[in-house]
Image 1 (tube, rainbow, N blue to C red):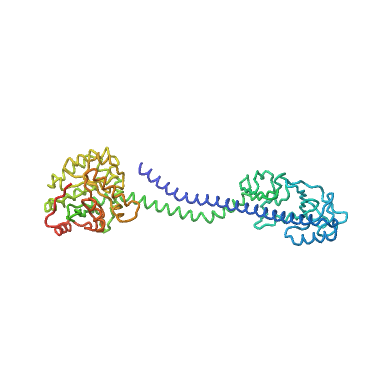
Image 2 (spheres, rainbow, N blue to C red):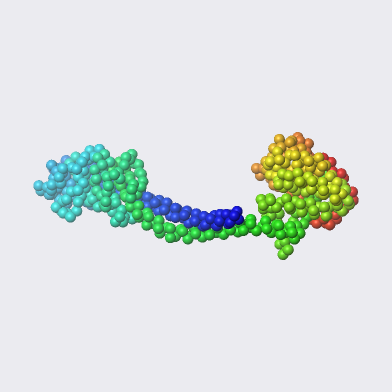
Length: 528
């Protein structure tokens, strides 16, 4: 039942890993399309306002110049000639002229006699400009013009010129609105008055309002607001195009994640089975790395390290299989195998070098049961190995549950076996638990030894660990010592023991015997 549920959850997780990137790519496509269309609307509103402000600037300049030359008679040849020059020099004004009594009596196009009726102003802006928004002139009966009047002079602009912008499509709506009266001056396409919202001078705003993306821009210098509206449907169309492009990448990413997940799950499921088979087939062995005195370089013991070589010759690294063994609960069986190997190999070595010891690693699970104490007692009883020839190493992470581990550690020490805290400084360092556990050694982790003589942020941690060990009267073993400079640094600060490539690499028991014989004919006793 549990296996079936686990399998179902695995398949569901794999499907989710495929679906999530696909859904994410669709989400990104929709968000990106809205962003693109919102940016386009904002650019269009800015461009409409730029044209309106340029037109207004040219109109004000023309009217100002005409007012400055009022000395001549109204609509005199000189004034009409000046109007013609101003119109020709303008890029946006179709014409300039003079208005009397709602009639255009002359312009840059000539004297209009009795004049053309342009009607009353549609509104007067906050700046006092009279604006007519849709004037038809006999000179161009099919066109409509915007006429801005100030002091009797008029700037005449074709309504469509303001909206002659790039990136315009039929579905896009553009508008130019009076800010003070909200009167529509000119529009292209559909315009909805509800699109217009409060806006400070010079400000811009873009939002989604129902079925449209609305962009507004208010002029700093004129009584105008420009509006650009793009249907949300345009963004949806763009989103579909982006989805066609992005979803395959999302699908590939999802398949890649699902594949990795599959292999990780398969590895998690298969490695425990392989571990059990390896135990049955006796595929595990031990190598030993010497531990030496820093002051004399004499060997005082060796750490037993587990190795797993499968029948096909493949060597599996401990950092790969040990965590899985701990998670799956097989680690206690592996510890039993280590003790069996120690019982098989170590007695002859200890008999030859009775002052040396073998250090054995225990897991957190081993420290949760008093059965481990019985196994050590059985080992010593059957092999003749004395307690002083054994040391137990437990990592900080294995001592998270200090209350559970403390009586086990006390029983191990009561049996005469010394206890070391391995990889100290990488887990949950605490003076209180060190005092509570009453261990014998601290092993300083290699990661801190590597920082000696460097500018790494953690280069002072090793000093704090040394001082902590001294304050608790604990012996210290430095792991991973590789240079004479590291050894000198540690020796000068009172660290007693070390292991690492500077002294020896892990080796078989036979090679360990030769190593000890070569180091010295008689070893000095280790003191704690």
